[in-house]
Length: 77
Ligand SMILES: [Zn+2]
Image (cartoon, rainbow, N blue to C red; front, side, top):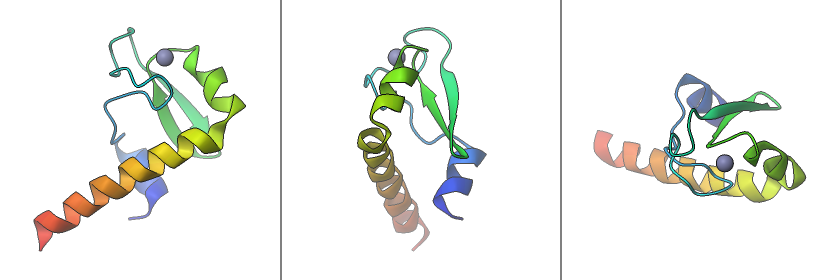
């Protein structure tokens, strides 16, 4: 399963990569499609912040995904 499939099958993070707030803290989380990658934010104002500097936030997202993948591999071995 590649990163994109992992993201689209379920969203692995329980917090907003822009604000750091827990998803749900600011009301219903919002989903955003960034070139086919679904990202969830705590609220709509986080979307323009993400769009202003997507690479900065995508790095955070990738780091989290790698940590999750690493823990999944640990469990299966
Ligand atoms: Zn927000």
